[in-house]
Image (cartoon, helix red, strand yellow):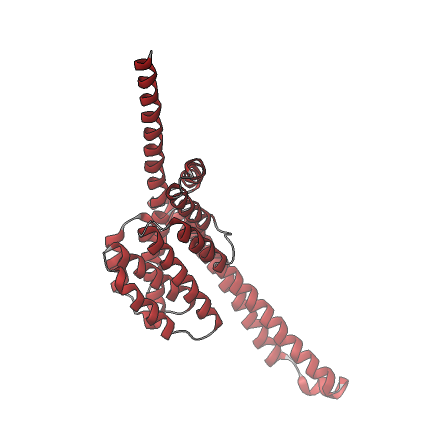
Length: 290
């Protein structure tokens, strides 16, 4: 894995280097145009209006170059995040981001590490990582991911009654429409977990659809895998075994190293064993009747 980590980190550094280089070119261009341009001559020769337009165009070109540099650097980060979102490999993802410098983004990095550990199924390490996060320093998707992971931990540790307190803490921190939507996502996910725990599968189906509608569609592979796994759980509860089997097979096919892929294999094996037992019982019954 170390060689693969080096390869992915080298790719990240390449994009960061190119992007930073573009930003430097943009700054040099801006400084050259500001200090090298004879504005007095331009005003005398062409008038103040043309001079103003030239200055505006200089800053516009600078802004475009700087934005291009930022987007190139951002692409490097996206390539790393795709290890989780598209390749479904939380182990490689953790190995790559754990080498990031913490600095001002320490809590964001820890949040992503906890996410990777969660989808590895390493819940004890995830719990320890969550304890080191200062939630007040998180915003947007990082904040809601923190609360989603912590709520899941509470359910797993038999502290489900305290999840309402976490929901209320998030509600008090809402600062706009985006946070409100994230709050609805958090509650829908928690309601889904409660319904599955109570074996209320019709309600679980409703909350599952609500959760992924709020997510704005399922564009990433890992989200499709998680959605399929939840559909399989609901399907088994509703007695829709064949539909559940198809969803589990998709999880195994696309889930790669995610914990749910291993769990799906186990569930498929149990379903296969169950169907074999039924066939054997029928054969034995037929033999006795003969």
